[in-house]
Length: 203
Image (cartoon, rainbow, N blue to C red; front, side, top):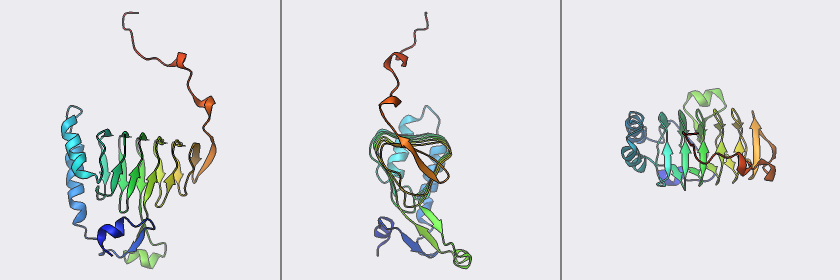
């Protein structure tokens, strides 16, 4: 199986330490380093780096430094994507981020894993499974999304959660391991009269 087919396998893969050349990470590490040295005024430069780094980069992809990933080319954004400070994506498999994806500070999306057997782990046996984030998903601060997880559309993952299994659409899920707390419903809508749309400094 070719390397690109391996990394895009929906069932994931198991590999020895030397199966995937470490040189493939070099470009991502260099680009992440360049990106993390940009300033808030370097909008065009940031977009240029992201277009080179990510496999699919929607124009409305915004990532705050510091950001780190393994390969970059396995990450695909499909609409407005907001990734806040200090996020890490271990993209040893494909990572799809749906439209209107909000990822809060300190999150880790990890496709990569290791063998549970200690002797195999010491020999460098690794595992990898893809991660899929649906549309309109908000992942709260300091969450960990584990290998092979899919999160359904319109779902919120509460801060500090560890998501080890698939989460359905339209719910709030929290905890370690994350479990569905309740569905999102009409009562969650903020009343329009409470929303400040502009600020008048002369009041």
